[in-house]
Length: 135
View 1: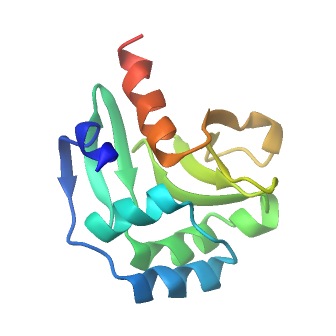
View 2 (view 1 turned 135 degrees about the vertical axis):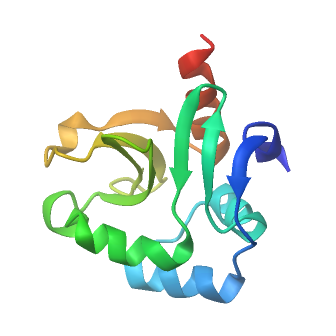
């Protein structure tokens, strides 16, 4: 799996299930990108470092409640949060276009203009984090 080289320093959770992924997709009104699905089938969330960048990928069981807690649908309906940097940034799927991309977005913002592009795929997103600290 292509993502494994990026997550070597992360603590990986037990695998997710196809049924749980489907339930969460229905609950959030999204079709997750295939690379993200493949990751979640390998590890239902993870925490740790991608090179020097900290990443928390939220487990499936927390995606709906955390998106509700952060009022994502109310303030930035173009986004679906799936993780964070453990500080002030959320990582999110940008669902405003036919092809979903991944962005980083300040938790305190409600302006979609504050979203910063991180990749068109989950692997590009991991590569973006890797190169933040290894330009």
